[in-house]
Length: 441
Image (cartoon, rainbow, N blue to C red):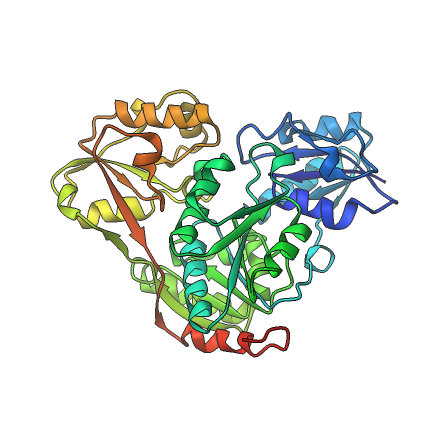
């Protein structure tokens, strides 16, 4: 069977590696790519594709899907990316079916790998719910229980795929050596700052075995709202009352909701009580056995007086406000809490690819997404910031963006951590992981 895999340089590669790479009955003819800039036009290299694919596998733009199905005589299209509505998935299915191919979703049973260590997974129903701070909190609790922890992050392979097969991050120098994008730094740097060992890359079998050699427990740090690559001993799912109802209408977030052992309703301090109640009812209906925790992620600024009375340009985590659909994040919350005189509209100052970003995501009126998938785009981000009329830049991403871009404008960092406010303590839920026979502490 001739197969095409629809993806975004993450789940698609993992599905290929775990299911199709050695599946002699099928031939993967191509990948398509979306969501992330500059993925299409590349090649999934032979070093990763294996001996059945000595020339590698080409990656095309998803917009050419129908033509590719016809031209390449595709028998089956496999949908393999995350954080899209159920309607989006069925539109993709309709295009595939109309062009003459079958349409398929690979589930956890065929794609999850088993670890020799206990696995704690942090997942979500949407991008931007609070996985990162929850993962950091989970690591803190596990380390407090006497465990060596390795974090394995959902893939973000935006550079040379051959150099990103299995990556290990323990120091800031590792970020430089691996030529990490802004998005990668946003995920890895906070862990490094806390002394957490991080693994990532493309071949998640190799990554898992490397992590197992250095840890008592593996923490899966999910990306977007994808379900885990590893069989979890305990799975958390983050649910967002600011997007109440999405937990039942987005793919594969609903899958995570139905699989999870514990649902964490984050942002209860900034959401309407009726939306928190709706989310709770949806959790109880979809997954009655799940433990429910309510939590907040309060923003913190070391020097709020630099915001008060100023014109501020707000920079937010890119995925959260682009395909995540949020119109604001921690940066805008902090700016309003600390009495900024004006929130500068970034759109008139956008240059290069950022002009296209604002055209694609018209809901972004008050924030600038931290786009930086290449050196050129980082330069465009810096030029946009410097050209703005702002007195100060409020950085809502968890990295030293001002230092990374060498900004001349004054900039203020916003931090945020998870705080459980209702429900059982994480230590109470995670303590049984320590008791697993696979580990000795």
